[in-house]
Every structure is written in structure tokens, then in C-alpha cells.
Length: 257
Image (tube, rainbow, N blue to C red; front, side, top):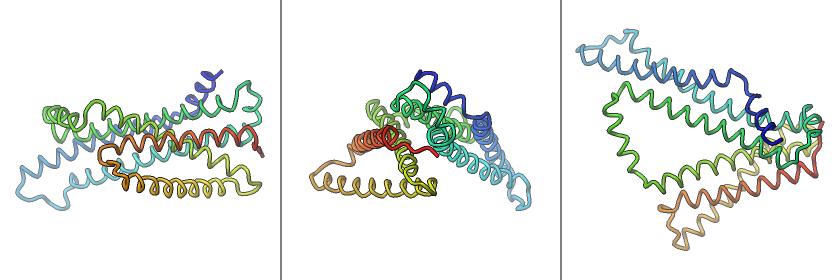
């Protein structure tokens, strides 16, 4: 049943979401070539006319690229919120609760789907940046720079960074879920109370994090070396607290309107 839940979550995202991310890649490709063309044009002319249209193309494409990247991340954020709220606390919640699944399966299926969209967005952004750089630097220089970039960290450190990214994403998603679950405890203005709960939880997490990290630094904890390890452990603990708190509210305090 878990696989069916996950399949439903993945299929529920509209085609517009993929079109939006495809646009990011397409615009980054054209932006890279337009900047390269303008650079070539500047090298072949002693003066560049301020009214020349080619100078506007990179600016326009840069704005569109920035808007699309921001839009893709906002769309992912909206999907994470909408799917959890609508399927559990909205009208669809009555149907969801009739399914032979536990609250753990329900949370985990939505969590895994949300993580997939987050990682998908990160991959799209990486591809977009690559397509943006390639026409400007050239394939040769780009390939020469890759070993240097890879040598910035050891393979173990790159793995730790990746794990930290996953744990951070999971913790962030679970904090959204917990905020929505807390918001539904109220009779009125649930959406507003969910936002209030989110910012309240975020402030508490920041205060605790700063307090603990300050204490660790005082105790000669080498933040510069173990930053990612510390962040990963912190996100893991936060995620566990958020997960079980959300599960408790779903099992014992569920209030569907």
C-alpha cells in the first residue's frame, strides 16, 4: 500500500511543474549563448552602441532565468504544503482516512515524494547552471575545472555534504508538516495559525541551535572541520522530533473540517 501511496503522490503533480523546470534549462542554455555572443561582439567592436538590442538579450534572459528558478522552488514549496494539507486535513482527508494505511505510512509517502521533488529541483538548478557556464567557458575549460572543483573536498566529505543536504531537506519538510498539523488544532484561521506555528518553531530551532553551537565552540569543538557533520546531526534530531510530533497529532488530535 505504501508504494501505491507514493505513486499517487508522484502522479498528483501537474505537467506544468515539469514544464516550469524544463524552462529553467532552456533559458539557461540560451542565456549562456547570448552572453557569449555579446562578449564576441564587444571584442570585435571598439565601441558598443548602448541602443544595440543584443545588449538587452542577456539582461532579459537573466531576469527570466531568475524568475523561473525562484518560481520552481516556490512551486515545490507550494506542492509540499498543498499535498499534505489537502490530502490529510482538507475534504480529501475523509477519503484518505478510510485507506488501510497507518499514519506512519501516510507521512512517509508524502515525505519521500516531497524529498524527490526537492532533489529534482536541485538537479535542475545544477543542470541549468552547467548549461549557462558551458557556452561562456567552452567545453574544454569546463572539463578542466571539474577535477579542481572535485578536489575541494575528499570523497568522504562530499558524501557527508550530500547526506547533510538530504537530512536538511527532510527536516525542513517535516517542520512544514508539523506546522500544518499544529495549525489544524485551531477551529478558525487554520492556514494563518499554521504560518504562525512555522515561524514559532523556526525561531525556537534557531535559538536552540545557536545556544548549543555556542556551547560546543566554547568546549573546543572544531566547527570549521565538523560543520557539515554537526549540521547533519542537528537536522537528524530535528527531523525525528518533527516526525514523531506530527505523527502524534495525526493519531490523537486529528480534526478535519
